[in-house]
Length: 498
Image (cartoon, rainbow, N blue to C red):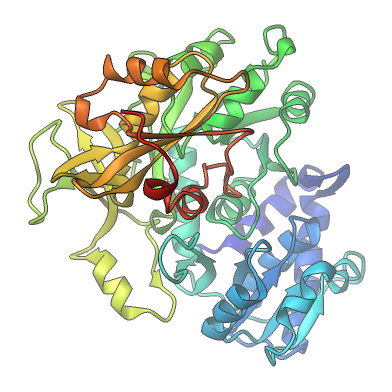
């Protein structure tokens, strides 16, 4: 059967002594992990968990959390990870929507769930089952059963729960093994994204289905990550471009032995030529990816053949994934013409939990409507332009925030940059730049730089300089919702710079 647990059982037999999970010096092999999962699954069934029940979980990444997630799937239930950074109010809204049978929460998170009426358990109960007699779990698993609900980041008014099945998640892993091959024989990967995010939970399933060794780290630290890349047999490293930038900025990066690495990829922001060249000097070609939670993860990655000449391209789609770019009427557009990116393939979500209306609006005629703007060139290579919500409409003209951000990042001294829409009496919206420069910078010089690279209507009219690194989401992406809230009155509080 094409289930996640059947893959783990395979690795239990064929890679018995291979480390499955490693976190903070605590390692567990596939031969040890699978029986632990079975014991927890049996305990969940004793607690009254039935097929299709939701098991919500909230806490930092841990071996216990990983085991609970797999055990819930093994018991025929649905694991629903919750963001530990959410407030009690936000979490209770999601819990009410999920109507879970049980909630597992770390001690410091438990208070947020008081009054929900749902039985609350601690992760220590999972730890207590790490050792013990083998358990017999009599539960039929259907490959098409929903096994995971991942809440979106909340850029909409209310987070939506993206549903995946055994089949969608294993299809994603199998496609990756066929397309790339770097992890076909296992190997190490680093995971820093929280399990509450699609990046975290999808990677847990993806890499364990491939029999890899998963190195979990609670937070990104450039020095620590470089140590891991040097000392451990890491075959694949994927993350936000900011991770690569900060590792590459370390003085010892130039002499670091990264010979174990076979493939590196970046998503969430564009790979710049400067960043590509930096890692290429180590013989490593950063490949741009594109995807989203609803697509099951990355739906395409730039082939190595085009990484050097076109580092910003995202490839032509996965082996089982189709893409097209359409206009506002749903018609495919000519090459190099901007439109909405649509995706079709076996790893696309089942739909949104308890939200038929949004599901019908997002998946139409078998195509996932991403809400992302992009192009496809004559070779079939995709270029991501911007999120629809990041398009600034100024005086009736569409402006890509990402395009302005790229120009800002080319200015000497700018470490990070975000562009958002500021209100404007004449144009309704106008670009605003928020930048961080460790050594400070002169705004007039920055604007002059932009004038030489951008049309007049694209050049920021407001500039805010932050004193430290810009806020980021748990996935490593810059946190635009927080910055939009912080600068929502920029048109009243800041002076125009031009």
